[in-house]
Image (cartoon, rainbow, N blue to C red; front, side, top):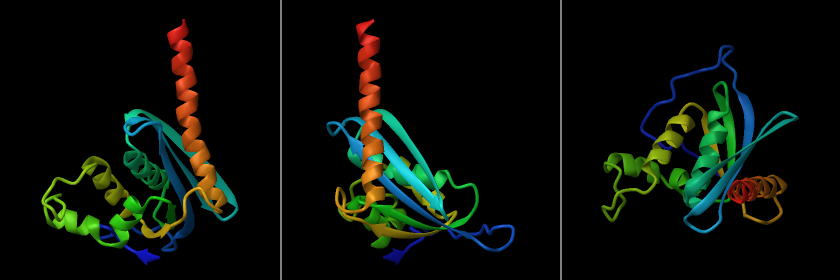
Length: 173
């Protein structure tokens, strides 16, 4: 795993006592159709405490849900932390560990092919929140032997099915 701030912006904040909590965040996004309804989920782990968060977007893409999962996981932290962020998304992982986010910022949010970077809104927010912490990005194999990744997948997919049921009930009325 590589550590990456993912941005040119410097980390300036510190905890009150100068020590940071070590937090693990597992994330996953899911989409029914691409684009289509989507869900994201994150599990935050500090010591023995686990917190699950999840959300739904009516019309989105899988990449946006992967970004949202990481973003919302980081946003849920109330103070500067040392974070191990685990994702099964090569898109998210590589952007930080291979320096893509820094290149995008330097190139005016253009790709190497000079095309506009997709999902800039979420990337900019994710970079901002990542810069509030010391984040190490880890790539995990999706749908494999990582119970936290599998749980995130389940939570994200449940967001889609639960909202589909609610929408179906509203339509039937």
